[in-house]
Image (cartoon, rainbow, N blue to C red):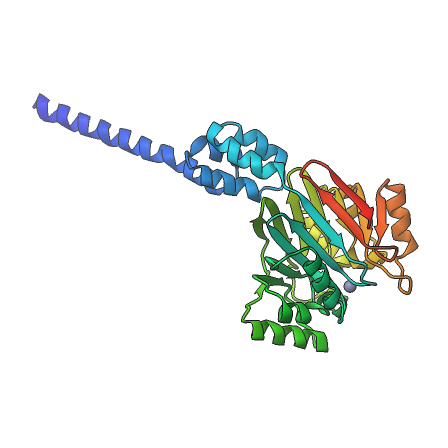
Length: 331
Ligand SMILES: [Zn+2]
């Protein structure tokens, strides 16, 4: 009788060992998808996963420290985190938004100015020898943001279009819809945080959480875009007003930045107090015009917060980031 008992004991022990081993692998797999870069890198040999996780984190510093755990991964990810040569053309477009973000191998356009401004943007693209737009982002459909879009789409290759969720009953919106249909582009309506990387620069698009707001649903439906180049971060806030700003600040996605495109053409909104404090930018930019200038309360807040402020009503502004240092100047 001793032999069968021994066999049974050995079998039970083997099963326990098997279960322990199997259970031991589960937490590693979960941590890999849970966004914890430190555990991911130490728990998996797959460098691709680590790089993807790192590109999705807002804090480049943590990522750099994390990846030093693996020599092979360090080289690839450090290159990404060191950033590239990024130039942002902040057009003098009146009380309207248009920003061209250019790296050696990618071009992104955030908003297109008013109707008729597409011509100016196309001229800039031609002067710079740019052959295509990798991404066009329409923060919302007011005419001072989507106005120039149709002309650009009708005359220039655009690979991808991201848009907000609040269509508008306007001539400019109709022309935009017709242009994307003719070009065979299917714009992507952003409904959840969307991240992508182009030429080492990481973009995160934060969408409105609602389809209706108490006041000005169009402005409050603005997409908010975070651009990370190495250690530099730029934040573009569309025309977000009180409700959308409060929603964005509550989302935890604000974080600090080097450059803040002020929302809604510098109009004063109470949550700007919290936005400027949370973002703590070195530079701010306001897209205003002499006919429709920014509010003085906004300028005073930026001045007392020690933020150097640029106004596109003065001139076009050029921002440059090499991944470590960000500078801004009137062109
Ligand atoms: Zn606007």
